[in-house]
Image 1: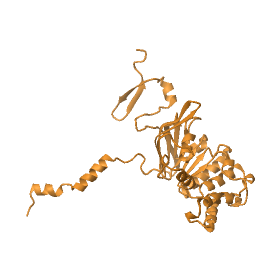
Image 2: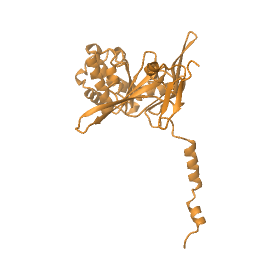
Image 3: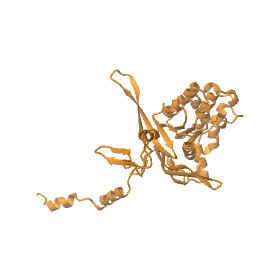
Image 4: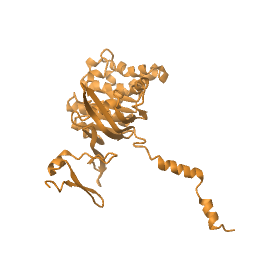
Length: 328
């Protein structure tokens, strides 16, 4: 027997549960940066000294995917080092939100922050002497973070020794195991420091100007070590740098200006019809969630743009032009 139109309508109508699920989905849009390894949302950091306030970060927004290799660049005072110390758990933001590997950096207790620095992020200072204890050998320095983590992590001495050997082999420093820091070159010290930072297998590795005290040839070796950590050990790597060699070798370079992300360069490898590879590079201006962009200073100067600009919407783009009422 054929069903009537009314019967078919009733049968196909959504259930109450389906309606509730649709309502929840509409009311709860996907969170900003959901699934990313690092998420900074409208991040603010204000420093006060002698009654003067300095805003190092001014609503910065940034997402970094798991397994990415990113360079942060910017002039002195731009806020890039402040951002790195916040991500490392060494400083606390004034406002906004910041999460690393699912950890909320604003809500952690002192004990949770200590665990975070031991297990979730590895950190490498520019000054090689700050990364290693001078009275321990390279192998002992690498083993120390595992020992500080404690036996609750389940790693006995044999497992720790195996992890030390694994890291030293990956970073090609196996022959340095019994040397103390004063017996190592600057490049060797930094490779040991990378191994120390990765001892507890953190998902995120942060580095502050790791090649700043090294010559270009040694710097290239250190950067290759970061690539090894990213590629073979699966860590998300973020490097603050002034070194154009380092900034030009990563897939993504993010520029920070006046406490906000201003632009980024994305690079991808393309293969032509003859099988030869080349790097395709494109620079983008960052658009935050309130619609703000920081136009490159050289563009503004070239067109004499200041104070205000005219903006028009075209079919597939937005036109930004000098103020056509200037002087009126």
